[in-house]
Length: 285
Image (cartoon, rainbow, N blue to C red; front, side, top):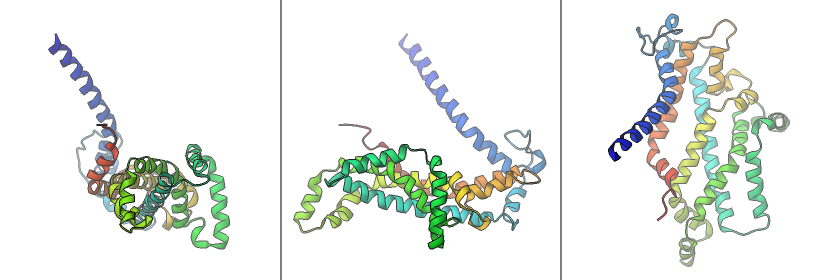
């Protein structure tokens, strides 16, 4: 009886797992297949193409009106800079909220979480007008600039990441810093040499979450970037399917496959730290 229940239990759980995997991988496999299929066979094609072609990958780099390599570079540049700044500023902010008691501390924490709950899209008009006004005095920080977009991403990522890091800092004993300061280290030296190495997993988690979110972000980039040479990858890719004359799904699929490569490479490089950061605190001894 025990053996039979255990079998059905395993079957139920494994069935759900494989069903979820199929739902997740199905669209990715279709995109991969479409990127290698001839243009006239994409609609109604089987998941495994009967003919293989590299025409979409060649077309991706041969059309000067659609500079795919430039869009990809813009996305990597904006996402990496925004993610690095997010990690640096949220680490400093979270450390201050975790270790120091100052006037306005509770209000500051409450404001951060309140900002995070506010739908970012509702602030779209205000963000647009703000960058328009800033651009009159600082053209390199206004509309249609990557630095302006990075600042907007940074503001949106500060709230939840500061809370995430603060919780991690709270778990580190203060005695570690106090011992370092008794040996003559300053607060900043204790933070850099003692605390930061200990919180490396959560720094990696924040970096990856910021990087993935900003690399694939579309709506803000679509509104704030206006010239083709400034587009990020998601904004530029929409030109392949919202074309005036046709929708080139094969080129779009090839671009999606190539566009995912930078994120996959970075994920593989930081995988061990990422898993450690995500599972930290899951088991209490």
